[in-house]
Image (cartoon, rainbow, N blue to C red; front, side, top):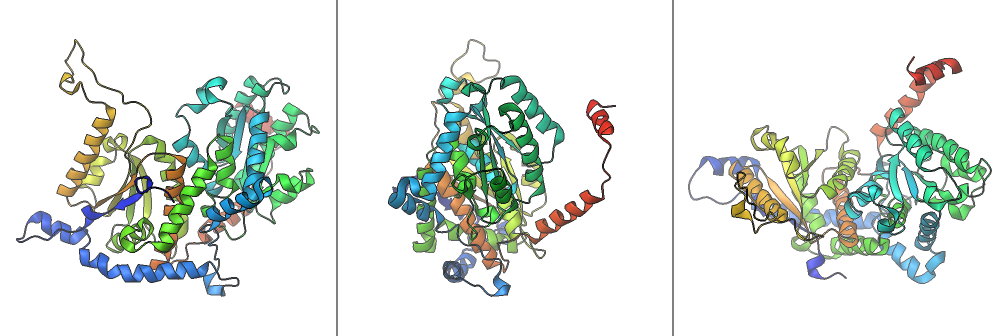
Amino acid sequence: MQLPDENIEYQFSRLLAQPSESWTPLAELQHQHFLLPEQVDEAKQWVMSIRGQVVAERELQNPPPKMRPLQPGFIDLPQKMLDGYKRKQDASELGKLLRRAQQLRDTVDRVVILGIGGSYLPSKAIFGALCHTHHNELPANLRMGKPRIYFEGNDLENDSLQDLFELLENTCVDPDIIGERWGVVVASKSGSTLETAAAYRAVKVEAQKFYGPKNEILKKVIVPITGQNSKLRNLCKADGFPDDDILTVPDDVGGRFTAFTAVGLLPAAVMGLDVRAMLLGAAAMTRRFLEEPFDHNPVLQFATVNHLMTERGKTTRVLTTWSRKLEAVGWWYDHLLSGSLGKYGRGATPITTVGARDLHSRGQQHHDGTRDKLINNLVVKQIKHPPVMLGMSERNEDDLNQFSRKGLPDIREAAIKSTNESYADAARPVADITLPMISEHTIGQLLQMLMLATVVEGRLNGTNPYGQPGVDAYKNNMIRALKAVPNLPKGEVRDQAKGV
């Protein structure tokens, strides 16, 4: 169990209406747009019963049709991964994952991660939060054996993929030199998602051209992550991949909840991160969810408060990350919330912003625009590097000498405080998710907290948080529409590529 000062906390007192002895315009606005303390108190018993429901769902082997799909396997997965590794070491699922990651790190200097949605956003969030901001630009010795990381297969963008191929062709010339080799992680639970499947086919052709079409090294530099029975698994087995070299997404873990499967952990291990610390953080958050009362349970607090605010008309949910390194965590949460709760005409619309950057683009609207927003700040207490100080200058036209003994962390702290004060003065509801620092352990806590809270919130508003009928509809329509597109003769394809 982590120490208390390593805990993530959710602080929502600022969005509770304060008692007032006399009527004021601000008190009236707070009464209209904030939560009353008694509303939260009344919801506590309800959400505790919902927790019991979510806990019981873990044991259902054959749920009734009205509860399907039911995929709660992510809840206990972090601890199961740790326990399996403790008992079986390299023979465990985590051990196999770590071995494949080390093999890839030892073999290549660049890794292309192919995936979309839940098969892409966890690794993107982890990379953004925990790796050097300019990781790919660092020379090899400063990266300490960690490959450069590129993300593709998520947007059907022809020219960006061709740009990547151009980069690889010009920087990876000799496949006998490790520093010029590149590899691929392809993640797709179903194995039939067209965006990723199409990108993988194109990338595999490039890899075969570079290494040779029959070179056995292809099975070392390509790591597939997929479901137990999927088109991608069948394709890789047809290509001669041993079963043990194909990593598996468990059937009882939905695509949006795969952060602590190989989808999130294999790329994290390739990046040189401590995946066991990440799993420990996630397992610790699960224990808090299962064992702690409401007042010490950030999962239940976050789910309840956000649900009540949505019911109160705050249907736009803003996650303001006060660290640019957490922006991709916001994108991941956008996907998690939208896909899980955006059903049957329900569900808040998520927006990710970065403070203080986006105060100069969205701040005005959040302060004075439509009153449909709840803002959740994501705040990090401790910085990683020494502070950048303002210092004294001979030229003081910018009038900053008065702050010469302050640094960027002081300015950011002032920005957070002043923004919260201005929102409070305008009766705009704001709460805080507080991280003591950005580390593998806290990121593990954060991702698990948001996944658990999303499931609880779904049960609170009567929505099945698993499955994605809207996304499945677009997928089916896209296949039908693609079949209707006439094929171009080869000559015309070449002319299009040349811009003729």
